Image 1 (cartoon, rainbow, N blue to C red):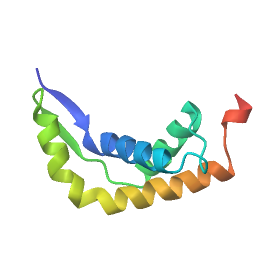
Image 2: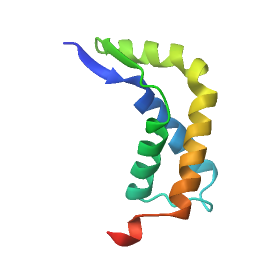
Image 3: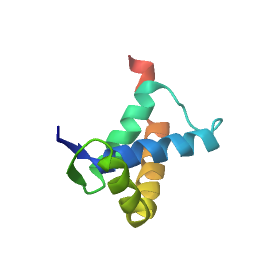
Image 4: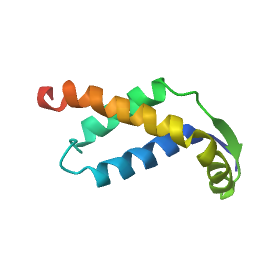
Length: 92
């Protein structure tokens, strides 16, 4: 069965995870801060929707990874800086 997937969302989630792992002491890793960061980054990137069969998403993700990697890293890093300055987790 086919489904529609925003490949950019998955790439942002992977990139965010990698950056957080490498900078454990620098950024908050709580769920709210992660979601805020991903949302900000995704709002600054073009979506990349695909319709795929099961398993095909991995192929498409890998083909897009190199093309978007620099833009994704930049967007995630900028989003992390914004969330770090104004975290919402204390307000929950």
